[in-house]
Structures are given as C-alpha cells and as structure tokens.
Amino acid sequence: MTRKNRNKYILIGIPDCGKSTLGRRVAETLNLPFYDTDLMACERLGIKDPIDQLLANINGSFVIAMQKVVDEIAVFDSAAVIATGAEVALMPDCAVKLRQMGTIIHIRRKSESILTDIANGSSRFVLRDMDDGTEIGMRERTVKLYAKEISQYDALADVTLENDGTEDEGLEKLLALIKRE
Image (cartoon, rainbow, N blue to C red; front, top):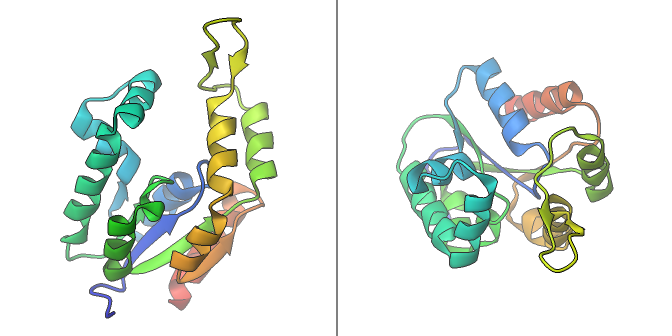
C-alpha cells in the first residue's frame, strides 16, 4: 500500500507513553501543525471533565468521535505531527487509515516507568468504589490494559522510539528519528 503523505508523523502507543507531550514539542520545534485525536474527540463531544470522557468511552460515543477525527485528519494534505489516543491504533479501520497517512512511530515506554510517573504525579484522575470507597486507579488500570496490546502497536509501526528517559531525551530521539525518515 502506498502512503499518501510520508511527512505526516503519527504517534501511537499506550497511555502516558509521551505521544502528546513529545508530539506537541516536536511539532513546535519543526514548525508543523500538531493534532491530538483525544483532544479533538473531546472537543467534538463537548467533553471537559474526565468523568464525561469515561462515560463517553462506556457508551461508545468516544470511539465514534475518534473514528471521525481520524477520517478528518486523513484528508489533510500537509505535513503534521499527530498524537493518537491509545485505542486508535487498535481499531482496524483507523489502523488502515493511519498506514495510508504517513510514518507511524510507536512511542514505547515501559509500563513500570509510566506507573511510577503516575504515582509520583500531583494530579491524578481517581475514582472511588461506590461500595467501600476504595480508590480505583483508572490511569493505572488503563496503562496495564493497553500494555498487553504492545505487539499490535509494534506491528502497525514503521519505527519504534524507546522513551524511558527524560522528556528532553525523548524529544531529541524523536527529532533524530524524524530527520532520518
């Protein structure tokens, strides 16, 4: 399958691996537009609260919005950096479109590193069990869930970037990788 626009860089990977953070920074450095499919889907659904995003995931409207966002970005003809939601690369129709759009870069970060980052972070999205009030760590559960799908991200990607250092190190690696492509 021929790719339409090799200068689109699509970042995939598990939650909190650095797709949005590194994508935003590399786009700014290269003076390219940056698109974040999660944020775009939230915008279209009018979601401002993490609880609303969770409910949209449960009722399926978030997945539908993500598919529409990917369809929209697919027709853009200019270079760009695109950070996808973790589920986008696992959706067969979206995966096909991503392959046609440009270079797919798997941002790979060890789930243990991500979980440590989450545990050390000051802001966390936390739910409580309605019966006993115990904390349900949704971010942790999400990272663990998607980490099981790592082989699917690897299979879709053209290249993989190991992102287990600092944010600046990740940025340097991503810039070098893009310059080679």
